[in-house]
Image 1 (tube, rainbow, N blue to C red):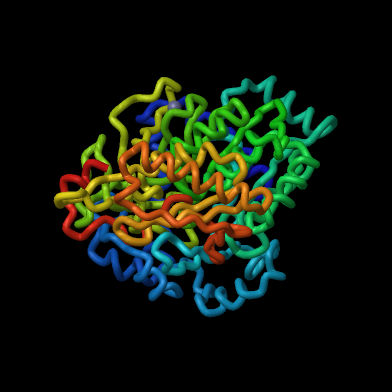
Image 2 (image 1 turned 90 degrees about the vertical axis):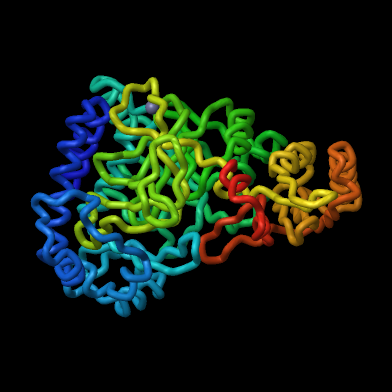
Length: 483
Ligand SMILES: [Zn+2]
C-alpha cells in the first residue's frame, strides 16, 4: 500500500507493455482467479450466483452475466465488505465536503450517471485506485523513456519544475474523473502541479485562466477539447503545451475524427485517446502511434457481444461490452454489461505492445441524421457535412446541432460577441451550404443564439451533434449496420 505499491505497479505495468501476449495471459489468469476467490469468499451475491461453479478451473465464459440494475438492487451483498451499505454511501456522497476524505477510512466512493441515465454507486479502495494512477504514468503516450531518462524527469520535477497537468472536466463533486484527481497517490504534489477547471465555467473566463498558466499535459473530454481547439485556432486561447512529455489526453467520451483534426491543427499534436468507465477507469488507451486504442488486457477483460449476448468476431462492432475489472476486489465487476459499442481490430499495431487493439468507434456519439428522401425511403446525412460549415464560423465559441424532426434541424450557438453580424453570418453559411448540397428545399434549419450551450448537469457532457428523433423505426437493418 501507499507509495511503494504505486511505484511497483508503474514498473510492472510498464514492463507488461513490452511482454509477450503469453506473459500477459499469465498475469490476467492470476488476477482473474484472485478476483473470483475474493468474490465467492466475501460477496454473498457472487457466492449465490456462482453456486456449483468451480472458481479455480472455470472459464470466464462459464460465468453468468451481471448488469447495473442487478448490481444496484443487490449492492450491499454485491460488495466484499459487509460494512458497505448503499444507502449510507449515497448519503455520504451527497455531502460534497467529504471530497478528499476516505469513506470508512479506506474507500473512495462516487456516483455515475452512465449513458443510459441509470445511476450507479462505485467504490474503490486505495489499493485499487493505485492501479488507476499507475496507468496514467506507465501507459502514457510517451512511456517509452529509459531508466536514466526517468531519473532525469523525476529530478527535474523535484528540484526544477513540477510536471504541469491542466484538466477541464466536471469538478467539485463526486464525478468519476474528478474523484480520481481528488485522491492522488502519496507525495504526488512533490512531482506534479495540477490545476482542475470546471467545464461549466463560462468559456471566456476559462480561456483567461488557461492563458495565465502553462502545463505539460491537457486533459479533458473530447467535446471540450474541440471547444478549446477552436479557441486556440481563433487566437483567443494561447495555451502552450510544454516539453517534456507534452500531451493532450481525451477521456470519458468517444473521440471523433473531427476533434482529432482540430487538435492537430491547433497544437500540432495527436491526442492520446482513453477508454474507461467508472466501473473500470483503465480499459484501453492509445499508444505512441495514436492510431487505435490498446485494451489493457492485464487489467481487465472486455468481451464484445451482440444484442443477445453472443460473442462478436474480431473486426466487427458489437452492441455491448462485458467488462471484468481485474483489480477492484471491493466491488467485483465480473462479466458486467456496459452499453458501449466497440469491437476488436484484426490489424496489428506497429508499436509492438502485446495488447489487442479496438476498432475505431466513430459514429458512436455523433448520430447519423436520417432524413426523408423525395420519392420515399431515407437518406443519411453525416454530421461531417454540418461540421464543414461550422468550421467556417470562427465567431462562435461552442455549438450544438440537433435534429428535432425528420427533416428539421436546430443549430444552437454561443458567439464570442453577440450581434446581428454574427447571426447573419451563421444563417448565410448554412443557407449556402444547404443550397450547394441540394438540401435547402428539403430541410428546415433554425439557428438560435445562446449565451452558453447547456450541458447535462449530472455528467457535464454535451453532444455537439445529436438526433432527437433517432433513426426511423422502419430503416433497413442493413443500412444501420453500415454505420
Ligand atoms: Zn500501438
